Image 1 (tube, helix red, strand yellow):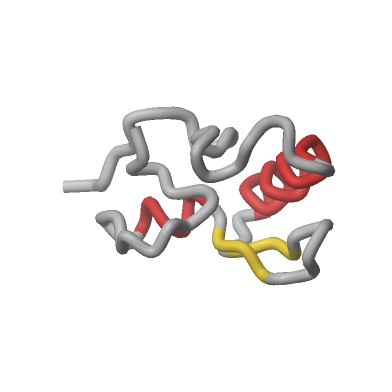
Image 2 (cartoon, rainbow, N blue to C red; image 1 turned 135 degrees about the horizontal axis):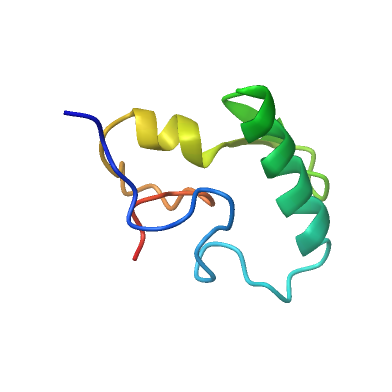
Length: 75
């Protein structure tokens, strides 16, 4: 059985990425581009750190409880 997400993979839950965060739209764009390309991660435009995509996290099958920005399991 495939894992399912309770919400869209494109937009992170506001508790994981505040919509008022600096460069919020740039972060969303980088994430959407990574999703479209089938990449497992993208480079955060603010910090330069690698960030896992929601699709990759969903493919793991469950939440790892590490506070991932794009966790598809956060309600």
